Image (cartoon, rainbow, N blue to C red; front, side, top):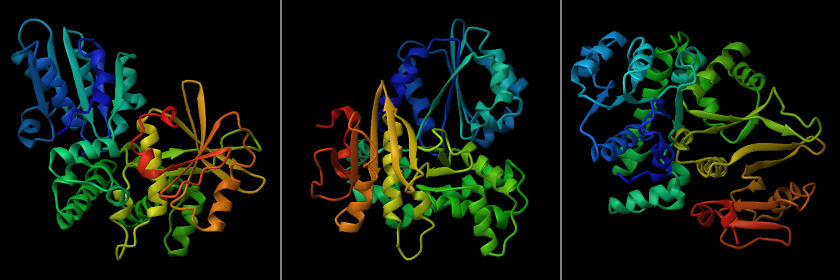
Length: 398
């Protein structure tokens, strides 16, 4: 596994802090590897380290609640500062009480979880602000290139557009890769969501989940999902749909952006744009290899921009019902970004470039496509996807 320095450098300054270090992210995105890499760095200066993985049933059978966890640590730690690593801690009953106790006794505590509930108010309020959190995501393309090189393999941009960046999937051939991704999806849907939230109407839940994950990079509302269900002759209330969306967000399966209206100068509170945490969630649901490359490409751009630490918004022009896919902001700089699979077709070219018509030239305007021809104009910079994926920052654009 590669050293994921992008994340380690964010966490490293807190190694010796008494703040609880919370490392979150979707299942199998590499949280445990990050924990291992931190542990390896700390082992160079200390042997007072305790590591527990609560996905291991043997561990969980011996330490199932907070009281047993505190007792175990006290019985196994050495004198001086102890570094405690608790992987998938949410499996432990009353884990938050144990963690709160442990950090008070010269311990540096690191925890991971695949469910954002460990960052919900009901738990973090118990920490009284004594924590820092770090979200880990599946590989972006630069990490994929580094990892596949270490495996003696290659990964094309097209492969990334279809199968995304879950680290483990690069170890398998085509058939086994699909099996792995489908099993991962099922584990998230059943274990992380249906069982955890006691969902009884499995058919409704799966219908909503499938519709959402295949509708990535689109603007819609809970009412539009309700309309889809009615067309399928399935009853599902708006409140239930909103609840299911919240579950998907809690498991880090989807990310939501509220469109920003040019007319009201505010977010459109009833509408949202959904991006899958990994485009494989869309692709494994496609039939006959008819992959949704157009929307997956925009989803990939979203994931890459988030990795670059940009704050993102969608700009919606109410007057002509057009939109700018992303307003990307960081360090006082702002970029207006359109994404299309190709603008070779004249009609598509006109539509995509028209979205910039109402934008002044104070901020940089960028269009990202999978074309090899440069379509830059005097006011709009065209970035080929393969070049964009190698950028560390939009400031690197020449």
